[in-house]
Image 1: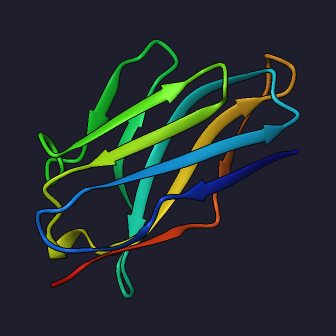
Image 2: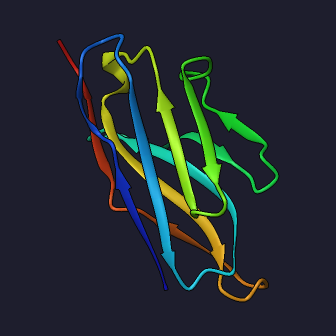
Image 3: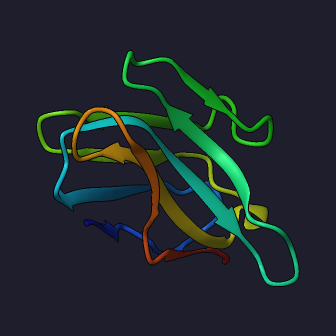
Length: 120
């Protein structure tokens, strides 16, 4: 079993920055891709950014140039640096990873979510 613990959410003014972290622990042999998603009430959860084990990353068009995803493979941690935040970035942000405990079978895991509110 794998557990994900997210941190770093909060209230920030427009134009401000936040850094989200997600630490994975438990029975982990390897992690394929790691990503951040977000959801607002009444809407589907959407991809914000994801990063693959080779370092390749992709982003939603709405956050390109403002958000940066990174990972620390030693610490099994993924980060999301969010700059130039806008009110429309307000959402619950969820970490998602694809991990394996044997190197053969990979399973998706979700974090519990962390609230990000951008407001003056």
